[in-house]
Length: 637
Ligand SMILES: Cc1cc2nc3c(=O)[nH]c(=O)nc-3n(C[C@H](O)[C@H](O)[C@H](O)COP(=O)(O)OP(=O)(O)OC[C@H]3O[C@@H](n4cnc5c(N)ncnc54)[C@H](O)[C@@H]3O)c2cc1C
Image 1 (tube, rainbow, N blue to C red):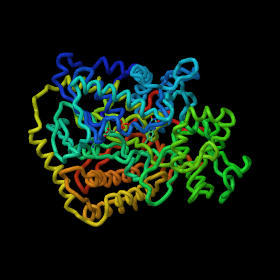
Image 2: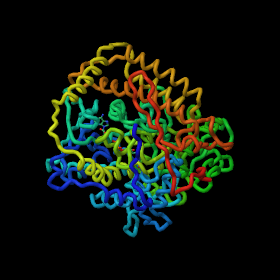
Image 3: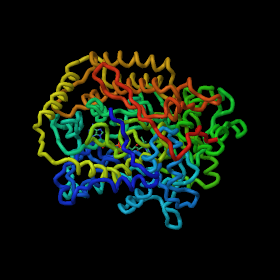
Image 4: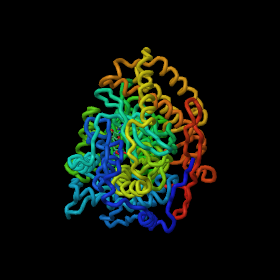
């Protein structure tokens, strides 16, 4: 497997400029001869599809929702980072680059991260031009707040619905191109297979989710912007529909899968309330700007929070990480919450919760100011828990929230299959072993608005349109494979629902490959998951048929892929004998319980190659070279 990242030579600050100059261009009147397929209409997909069409390419865009504007990106709450330094508080492109490399525990590629920091400032300008209503401060400049892992305020936001506003901007740009006839939009279509011809990605097979029709679509390049795979844990903050099918099927066609075990557990989610719950809700990290996190000092203290005096509270993040306090990065804050709960100091039912308390902030700023900043989040919390966070502290606990792993891509965001590009959360690129808050939106939009329009052009300049159509033998073969899989799922007619299998898989993943991992636990998971997968294929029940709308069938296909992916995540976590970022192996920790990296053996991206069904994938390595930052032990103390 060729893992050449094609990182341009020269100083870090000039790499992207150098690369853009080196790139071949497609002449304006030739662009319409090329067809680009974009799967996904979230921030990464919508921005890529709109930008490519604006340049003059023909684009087909696919999503499984009924409208592109319902992509999961719409859920993003807190904000988007950019090194604008509007606050004059010491920010710079270099600092955002450094914070991101350090935040990712030195497990990402320097050149990509620097480019991301550089492009962050363009994103804000682009979105403002589209009319995205970012919060403003009194003087008229865009307002900023702070997010974890940074000591500057660089997060741009639109109350607690930043993702929605950004997506409306990208969606408008996309709709304009649909109106102009340059983008053909296929909503309610699910990609189920990648078509590879002579080693190049040339198309996809989709199922019309309403009629059940299976069809191929061909193009000169394919972009996957299909989001993250955290729903492998069943309970997560993701929209229920999020899944790994597109990237997993591409992996099985030859795309390397990088760092699958790197998942993010977010510290501020509403705790699990019962056995039959199927979804978790995030309380944005932005709340940690003003909320203080604490638990009782004494284990087993069951008094109501208002009856516990300050001296008997442990503001543990402020105590353990005085420089960053409540804004310690997510992996660190999550582990700290787990630790205090393991000590018996957790609050709420089952003791799996910590307080996020706004009393001080309300006393200082007044509840009106707090409502202006976080009103919709407070309302959401009250609707779900029945408790009023203006008067009673919120209860929060860590939950699965983001996946840093994904399909491996080079500097141009191209996977190991030529012509297959991967953007947004679906690729592995910029966040290393832990993503800092407010940086996923930044990455998705950088990829779609500012990177792919160049790099896909460069790729297309080297290939000639050849008139291939959907009758090609490879399309037919891929369609047959899709039909056979659907028929196999429908034929089982067993006795267990898809959901019950998914829930059990999620429990195994959370227990053995969640916040804390051990060799023994991962080994046990690698026995349990294949056994459960086999039972799934013998005993799942999928009612209905493949000829019309069938949500059980959709879910069954996705859960089938989650089984294989879950196994790979455990294998990856087992092979990485170190702790870094969100990957915490209990055997590898410092005396005070922090992640202990092993740079000698593991300063690389682990990339897995599919070798066939029921055979373990092969592990490859892309070494990570640090020329501009020193590999250091990460400290937020
Ligand atoms: C509750 C919540 C709050 C968040 N808040 C923030 C925040 O404040 N700041 C921040 O930076 N990040 C935040 N994040 C993370 C961020 O929202 C996501 O990482 C990001 O939006 C992902 O964007 P994307 O374009 O890569 O994918 P998505 O938005 O997930 O879009 C995926 C697209 O792919 C399509 N798709 C997927 N599979 C297929 C298939 N097989 N066939 C056809 N179409 C397919 C879907 O239909 C969809 O259109 C938050 C995440 C959550 C869960």
